[in-house]
Image (cartoon, rainbow, N blue to C red; front, side):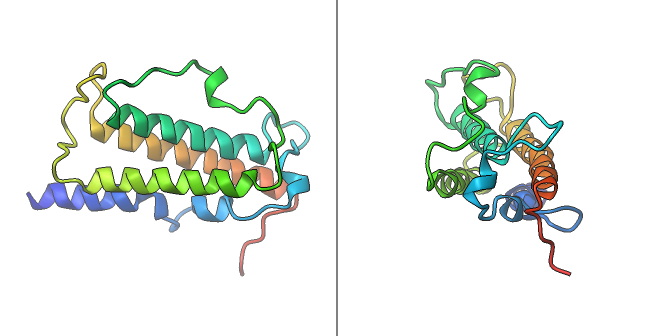
Length: 161
């Protein structure tokens, strides 16, 4: 089906779109350690909290899609880090790398012709693979915007002119 392949291609590329907004890669680019755990005045989350929330949630969605023994996490406790600051100097890079690995796995899932995008996930409650891929993208877009805003308020967002 040519339409199904076109849909798979669009789903796999969705996270790279930058036509109308900043990309996740730009929002997650290196950030000075002193700013990673800083919450701008009036905002609830630091860059680290947003990055980790994105990583954990994306991993959870991927696990739900692939793991027949999936165990539901507790909301919101399991989806947000316990601290505004990262646990170490290399935590940011490790989190971005883990996020990218899971993002690649979601892309592979979108492209996998053996996965019926419209099929219900066997261990789910009516969710389809298509719904989960769209959920991952919607969640990423929302929090990428937040991460950009936090970086702007911290003076750590530099857009090429």
